[in-house]
Figure 1 (cartoon, rainbow, N blue to C red):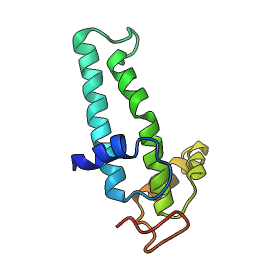
Figure 2: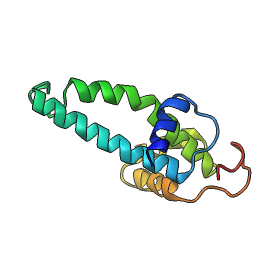
Figure 3: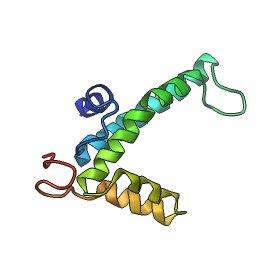
Length: 121
């Protein structure tokens, strides 16, 4: 499972081309949340957090480091369902946009080749 996280962060750091399977995207999200929460806990334990909020320097550095790979993985996931990466802006529509985007992230990818490349399976 961890190889999907490693693949997104190292092999496809800023790769916005191609397609990403559901497992690649969702395992990346899972490990990203685990590491982000761990960084937040460490910030609080070490006293590195910014006073009014529970985030600190470790969390901030981690979030900056995985921002581009996370965005690239989301765009490749949209490519797998034959949608453009610009479709991420649908999330700006209050409530409905985020739900629609979540449904797209959970939908099985297009079978066979599509506009964005060969089938990722």
